[in-house]
Image 1 (spheres, rainbow, N blue to C red):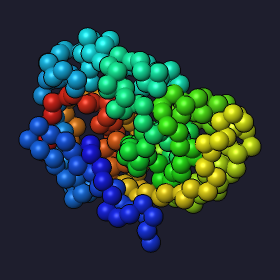
Image 2 (image 1 turned 90 degrees about the horizontal axis):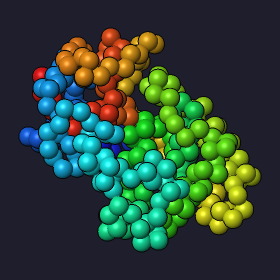
Image 3 (image 1 turned 90 degrees about the vertical axis):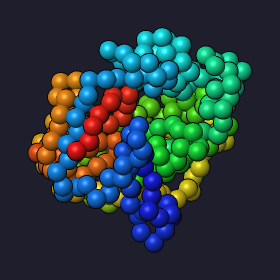
Length: 265
């Protein structure tokens, strides 16, 4: 899903996240779908997101085995940025690494039901925060390349989570506790960050708040996979992060189904 905002990050109100479902025939805006019947049907076809060939099984997110082994999009430093060697002129595809990883990166704190630390390319703000369903987020460091952002993240993972609990994230409705939690977390960063990395610390960046088209989700949420349930039908309750939420509590992570061919009713 592609996401955009209906207003500036720093405005008089939190901007609303507007989603568009990417399809081969073009984008499908989802703004008017919450509260209406919505059916997603898996055709049984999977195409590698890197090379495009049809496969029976994916490795990683939407990749065939050769691309998973060789494509820069599947490099170990995607998951572990501290391993990145783009700044040294190395990588599976040196030019790709220069274009994507030897660039400004941001280390941030986000509130997704709890405070987490994360890393993203500077140009991916606020996309990365939206993908994770963050209701609040704030940059805490800007660095010139990915490996350095990873070093800061590793240092801070001793004190903060680096993963999102998707159930807590989807059930979160009130951002107020996050404001206090992020303020306290940023102060803690100032106290615990390795002195060698404090040069990059941002002590006063503005906190960003985001609003999603998901309200009053049911307390019991069940994750579903198109491999096991090829058709999901019912009233679409809303969307948050990369998750479609139906009124009966079924939840589909769209990002985990990248490369799947589906029809929409």
